[in-house]
Length: 94
Image 1 (cartoon, rainbow, N blue to C red):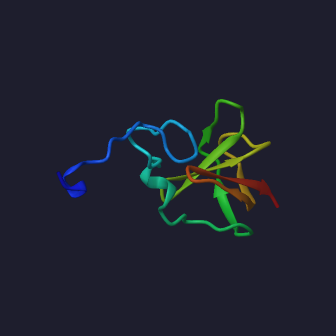
Image 2 (cartoon, one colour; image 1 turned 60 degrees about the vertical axis):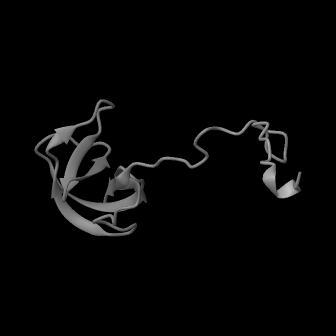
């Protein structure tokens, strides 16, 4: 019997002794990799159209959510983008 005919047996444990999962790749939502319509430091005039569950004002630019603390529905404010996340951005009143 030749050694080429024998298939290696997988124990389900990798070289570091950790359990291998069936799917080793992480799944990210498609929005995670999309180009965002705003950048950190961008200043813009927006109208607050919604309220978040936490009480922050919300606006949308091309469907991308921007939270603006200390605002309410109907406010027209100039904001500066301070943080960008895969699903939303945070702006402050400037």
